[in-house]
Amino acid sequence: MLYKKAQVGETMTWVVATIIIIIILSFSIFIASINPGKDKDISRLLDKQSDLLAKKSLVAYLLTENIYNQLKEKENFDKNNGDLAQRIFKELYEKDYEGVWLGFIIDKIPEDNNYFEKEKVGSYWGGIKKEAYNYVLEDIQLKEGNELRLILTRK
Image 1 (tube, rainbow, N blue to C red):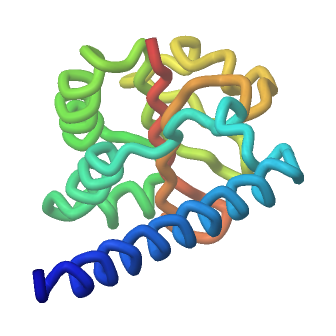
Image 2: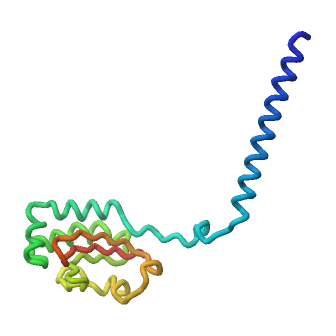
Image 3: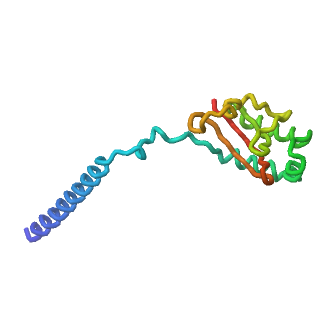
């Protein structure tokens, strides 16, 4: 009998606190719904256009022996580094991606090579907006105006 007032007081405190929290939450939801903007539309978000494993593979490939220096000087693949690139990128990524291309971009122009067909990722070169095409793109600049680019197009 002595503790009944304390129980009622504590219960009322929790009820009032819960009601206040519900009112604040409702007010926040109402304010957020008043201003519907395009920044809330998650259907417009781009697909993932980078792949951490692909980036690490590209960096690891360039760190293999003296491949970075060879590619920087020659601006093309030779037998050794081209075959290694094919083994690394085609064998690893052709299961998950429709097209795999690794090559040089010299003064913003993709260069043909004997190891990767540009046609497999051809629509990327055809001027399609980045937002409209599902791909992964990784670049590493070798020197001014010369970069090594990996393009993986999704299935």
